[in-house]
Amino acid sequence: MDNLDEEAALIASEDPAAARLVVLRIVWAVAELREHPGIGGPGRLSGTRELAVPRPRYVVPYRVRGGAVEILRVFHTSRRPPGRW
Image (tube, rainbow, N blue to C red; front, side):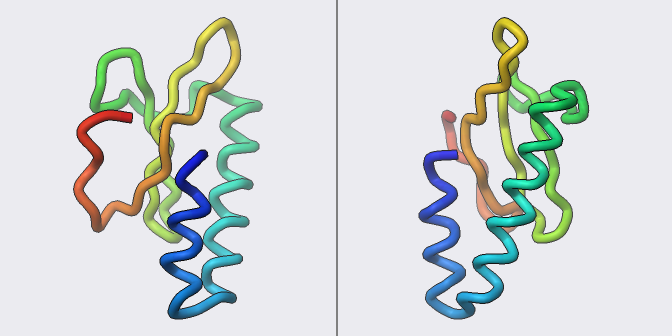
């Protein structure tokens, strides 16, 4: 979740409280994901899966390797997905 700080800073520039809430929701969703790696759907790229965080509309692409969840990125659904994770 290397880019989560960037996302939070972008939101915090307009609403710091909203930024904290967004980060908490994403961190909570990722914690659930680590407990249940299969909850995300098939990803856009081969070998990946994606977890939707509906409020605040973020997507967390990830892959599972050797039972461990590797978070590849966090992005808002209003933005074009990055070309690579």
